[in-house]
Amino acid sequence: MAQVIDMAGRVALVTGAAAGLGRATALRLGEAGAQLVLVDVDAEGLAATAGMMPGTIVVQHVANLADPDACARSVQVAVDSLGRLDALCNIAGIIRMAHTTDMPRRDFELTMAINLHAPWYLSQAAIPHLLKNDGAIVNCASTAAHIGEAYCAAYTATKAGLVSMTKSLAMEYMRQPIRINAVAPGGMETDISKTMTLPDNPDKQLIARFYPIRGMVHLEDVAELIAMLASPAGRSYHGACLTIDAGICAG
Image (cartoon, rainbow, N blue to C red; front, top):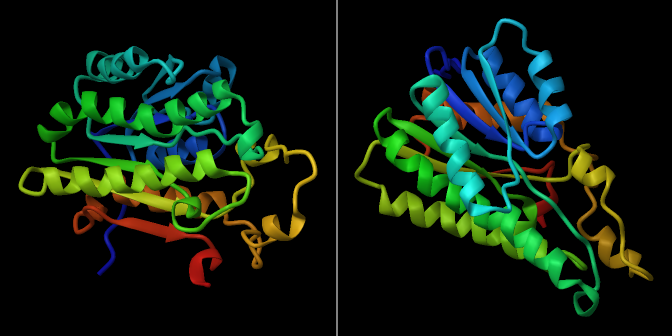
């Protein structure tokens, strides 16, 4: 029998909450009764997200997650403000498409910092608190973790690394009261996709290989999956990476 997603009395920290999937995840967790700590570099976007949840306890925290210290502070803000932490949802992410030989070092390093290093530092800070409450970590990977994507080598490396990190952490904490999982969405209508620019003179046939034949994945469906994994409804999941991509990885 399917379990209802119930986060009443629980605290969830959601990164990238100013827009897109982070916002959708925050809204779904708030609907399920969670108290929320919303983290993003975009203060106006955070305020807009919080404004969509009247009656939900929401703490807004502006942070640049490219800074490891900011990751640790974000977790501490959650615990100091709301007294506990039950779920960490690592949703924040960026993509910079480029010909590999032309990619600026700053873009490569920022991609690594936001997509891979930040989930590591956030998890490192959060795990001691999550262990107290049978908590959960949900990492947002991508179908890019499973298939090669032209002009996205840095991005795909971070997402494959995030899946591997998820599985290794799950093994490390196999005997302790925490669940650690990932989701791998296909293309969604989010700010990250709307602002994505192609490199000069791309081979469009190569890009078409990872274009979703059935169309974009619905944002709300991915948020629902993340909320399930973050809640007690996901009690049997540990070390999993759930693909939700309308068939992109099927072949």
